Length: 554
Image 1: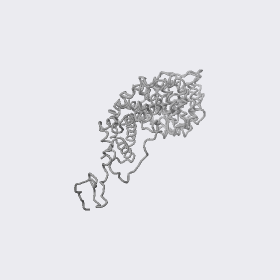
Image 2 (image 1 turned 45 degrees about the vertical axis):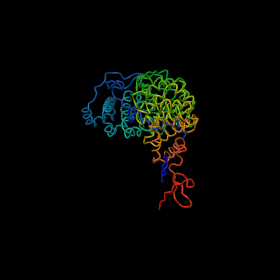
Image 3 (image 1 turned 90 degrees about the horizontal axis):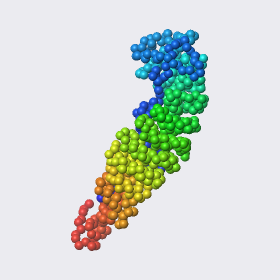
Image 4 (image 1 turned 90 degrees about the vertical axis):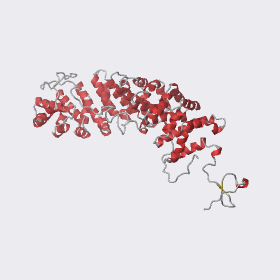
């Protein structure tokens, strides 16, 4: 028999799969494309000698003309032994930084900066404990001693690159307004250092990000640095400013959209650059913006309204650098979580051939993200589903269902299930022709109740089409035959014992609707009882039976 008697005390969960879930926002799907705080992008960056302008080793030169750079030979890198020795000399360095001699102030500041510029385990806490942070903050206002100003800014930037406690020290001593003010410095190196410091502070937490955004005109000044035609920024400045802007846009809870809205046209221009670092950070920034939960998807709309941006993102899916591909795909995926018109704006730029490429790439996270993206497209209109079919994406999706790892398989299952619910009967027939039924039936054995419900809904939709195509009713449902032939019927029967209430109910309904013939109707029922004798009757009714009826004593 197909059905067990219903067990008592079943605990139910959320009913079924709501239609609104077919297009899924970022927060509704657990996708990790990165190692924590690393692969996605560096939230904080320490400025070492390799990444900074070379600092002149002339301690008597304290001021620069507007636009002049700090150029000279580099000082040798410090070893751990050097750091240990210099920490022994902290009293002299503290005296020098607090003294009135400009040369001693500068040389002591340089020493602190050098100690904090090492790549491994810089002594940030030792410098903080030395009590020099307030004095370094004072140097940020020394506009007539720009080299000292620069060195102090570099030192504080590296303090802010440490832990949250280290960043808090910078914030508590008034670092945010000081660095926002320095965004307007006439010296390019000082401006760049301010950008770097604010990027570190904003990257620490959403609270500090919001503090930076609400201080002065930080976003406006950052945009000015990137767009000022009178002062053409060098590449390192563009890289740092783009990274800083991405930190302004990232984090949860999300920043106030009105505070970052003006960055979108700038980001749309930055993704047109060719530098991989600029492309990576600008694409990540756009991915943060398009992770949109607003009414009417206004953030997504603000992005897709930028001329050429959808086409450029699609082009970047084919970039030779994986670090660029990942955020470009993430942004495209977020855009197609919008409404049908926003999804269509992306589809009009023909992303599907590029998605076909990432769907079969070796990197699992990209395959998973691509399946999630396609599932949001197939949650759209029938015409959009047809575009997915025409682009030949169904065979690799079915192949993923058969062979890939579960976290990728379930995204492919969503993509196919959405076709069965929002597509035409012809779309469903095409899925069956691509061996989607056996692949979906195999997914019924997974341990994820929600995914089982997604698959059951899809099979229900497929079997409905098979029923409509059957001239003889349920007994001629060729799709039901396919389910039975691939072992799906056995699995459906097993699901009647599933602990989840909704899985149980759905599997029973499918069995009743498509697999129980008239001959099965009496199966599982109690035998009739003769009213006169109170005995059970088996086989023929009593009135028509000429054989003695077995009697049972109770």
